[in-house]
Amino acid sequence: MTMLIDLAPLWYFQTNAYVVAAGPGGPAVVVDAPPDPDGVGRLLARHDLTPVAVLVTHGHIDHVGGIDGLVSPTVTAYLHPQDVDMARHPGEQLRALLGQPLDDLESEVIAAPFSDLSDGQRLELAGVSFEVLFTPGHTPGHCCFYVPDDGVLFSGDQLFQGSIGRTDLPGGSYDTLMASMAGKVLPLPHDTRVLPGHGPATTLAAERKLNPFLQELL
Image (cartoon, rainbow, N blue to C red; front, side, top):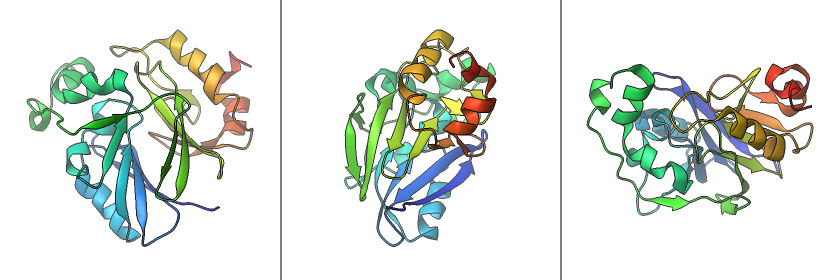
């Protein structure tokens, strides 16, 4: 099948929010929800899509801060349980990241309910089959989402074009991230298209060849 995939880089950190669907004019999955639900709404409206689920790669505020504006009785949010406590308190995250909170998020608490993600889980959503890859390291509960039918990996902050996710924030671990890379990401097919949480798309073939962090593992 050929999926519909579109994205918008949103909020202060230009986090990539994706919409994924079997085609226009139907149900869709949102991958990551920056604190700009109106921006996500415009992305959905561009293709006349109705969200049914939000897959959150990890609990950092720039990926989950807009979740309350998207979740409803008909829209389920998914997040690994090890990142839920982190996701609830964006002000604490921003103090750790920036040294101070942003005024609009200082006292905010994320209230949306989350359904748990687990390694190897298969989710059939909006006509698309997602496989959950548990890839801790950037955060304790980071997950990537692989669509085997289309050879697409939504890599969150695990793998970027030419780089990897930060591991110097609370809960991060370079050794754990690299073990996740070796065990879960590098075994994927060579031609896998990688859609990261920030920056441009890439391929696993290109990253195997050019990404200096992956050279350590090859």
